[in-house]
Image (cartoon, rainbow, N blue to C red):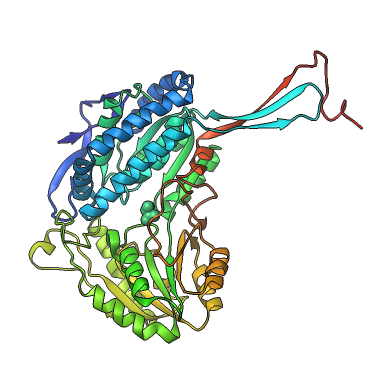
Length: 493
Ligand code: UN1
């Protein structure tokens, strides 16, 4: 199967295009081949998007929303099929594949509702017989760059608000996971979305992304991915005065206090650290534990870690799937030596799994480091794999300090039975998302998603905040006095 760009409502059959294989990370099987596009393909897509957007912006927002209802309905109808594609190309276990598709469905219906709100503001004017209001205007053509770990949900966080707000978009999905984008293109078409509103340009390497950021007619870049790439996006975007919305890494922690329900904490840690094989920006990779319960927590964690089933996510009984590719496997593995050299104790895992079906895919053993201190690299850098570090602390205050002592600020969590501590924690944890008595993953689509410090640049995906990224405020003054009224001058007391 050859996946080609989707531009102006058509799948292009490019003569002479280059293709890159799409590999199932669980089996090594080649699933498809995806087009490696060029700057010229971006140019063509922008042309189509620009023409389509002019008309799209004039469609009333509640009518634009109707297309989202239809897209959501189609996604719901095809949920099982979409989840299977997702699991095959990305590797997350099928239960999570279904969950991610559900996240996209929820986003469709939520944003469709926004078509009947898109609230602006009316404001009193300082002059008599003058009316003032600010409305949300579409921005134009917007560029979406999405990662492989959530091939569909993150794309919906960006594309659905862009659509409802009256923009057209160019979407560059990750090269590792283009099949979901292809499925979404088919859904856009089936839902009757006007040609050119949604365009997909597949890329590999930086050519497509760079062309998008540099293009004068793409006025917003919404990016989710690594901090390294995000920094480049911001630099280049800055040079071109682009509005750039960034969602990047995390070094998320679960805090376990001495009064916590330990069984609940263990379940929360397991799910948020080893779900998606630790490849979520929200994944837990640090456990900050009160010294009085450290031994007990570690013991219970190990017992349950040892029972995790690892394998091909298409098998319903598997709990931990593969990691995305060999490069990721090596990167994760490199942290084992780093941790040991720093003096951390490797208690479990720390190995690339081999033998039998493991040899065909990219499997990493769930790993636990103990005796970790906050300044160690394994406690500071994003590993993006199934690895957790236990950091012992002596007090609530120290736990908060350790949590905040990293360059990232996406998600955090605390397990405690003390309501005062819980409320203090939600105030003092310096992350965009805070959980009380739950792990660090599982954000819901109708709340803003994003983080502080090195995780982002102040914007948010999802929730109503996403509308801010894809609209421009326009302030409108209507003077019905019939005479010249000069603001700041004629209204002097
Ligand atoms: C991501 O980690 O890149 O909150 C997105 C969660 C999911 C989304 C994660 N709803 O874990």
